[in-house]
Amino acid sequence: MISSRTSLTLWLPAFELRLELVRSPELDATSVALLAPGEPGGRQVVAQLSERAGSAGVREGMPVSQAVSLCPGLTLLEPDPAHYAAAHEAVVEAVAGLTPVVEPVEPGLVHLGVDGLERLHGSPPAQVRQLLRVLLEVLPPPLVAALRVGRAPGTFGARVAAAAARPGVPVLVPAEVPGALARFLVPQPVEALPLDAGGVELLHRLGVHTLGGVAALPLSALMRHFGGRTGGRIRALARGEQIDPVRPLHRPRPIRVSLDFPAPVGDRAALHRGIDRLLDRLLAHPERRDRALSSLRAGGYLEGGGSWEIQTTFREPCAQRERLAFPLRTRVELRPPPRALETLFVEAVEFGAPVTQTSIFDRSEVGARAQGSMEGGASGGSPLPPGIRDAVRELRLRIGSSPLYRVVEVDPWSRIPERRYALLPLEG
Image (tube, rainbow, N blue to C red; front, side, top):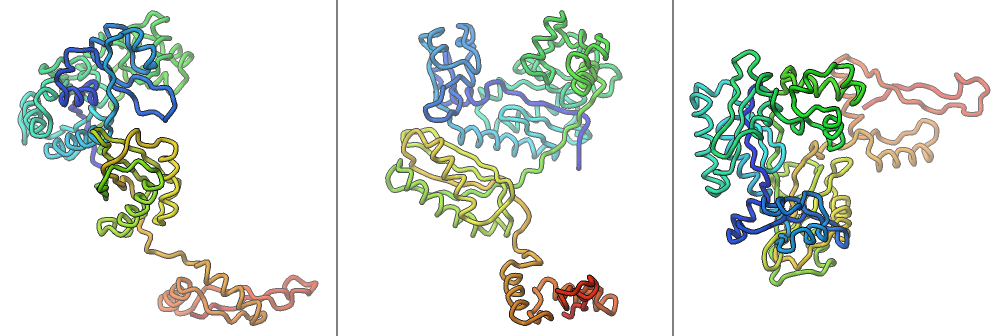
């Protein structure tokens, strides 16, 4: 797999909320919070918030009731996941034209492998300028202007550099200078480490607030507090010793089929019928190329604007409509659209192996052979399954004889085990 030691990281905090503010610029100077997708009847929480809302004490993950009590003028926005996914996909496709090594982490955060790009796009500052020009073709200028860009050895260092950067002022840590990454990491906050809130709080209680402080701690102390693997990893990251390369993700192109309703539909039975119809079209789609489906996304565009999405992943890839439809119907029951849908879509996002190859032991043929054995006596004259018959012929052509045998009952009531069964060569 192609990888890159040097990472150029793009980070746009509150990516989804900024997309909403571009659509509704009048809210830019107000206190705004984007709700997290939740189950119907469940507790609604804040997913992302503006700086004004944060100044009022609102925090991510806070229940809506508590957020409104802290900020009475808070504007709450419903999520539009289809819009966010399309924007993120457009960003990934755009930057893939600059480098083949692209690792999308989450909406608004993408690592680019830039080893060897100097010959194509010039120095690191020139690469950043080229990158921003490409992004202006798919994102509104306010979003591109708010991007934070960091460049460093490894994805961790580049992500920390992007977090330390300001919009329009990238932080570029030279990959070719020995010790540059370690010196850059020393004053950075411990919140940059891949730890949960409890781990960060523990470091603060120990009086450690920067990565330099983590790097100075004895390895035994970190292993005692965080365990062997985590303690060693965060120390290596803080000291700039662990360089995680950019690894491109295999991203098969999704296949989407959609259905436009003549009138908005909110009835769940009608949605179930629409899902069945779309699954038939999806399974017959020529781009599927007989591949099984591992993960499906269903959703639609709501009456009056906005979107709704659900996703399910199967334990085993399959290509049978009923097996695909049941979990989607269940998800619709658990998390139905908040309003009637004008358009319904189903999208295959992950695939398994082609399903045209049949099993060497076909169930119907095994059953027929067992029936024939019962009716035809001990010799069992029923035909072999096609897969085994072809294998026998291939072996005979290659080695001159068949090394495969079948077990045949001869004298099942004999007291001598060797007389109960016999081995007969398989003839294809």
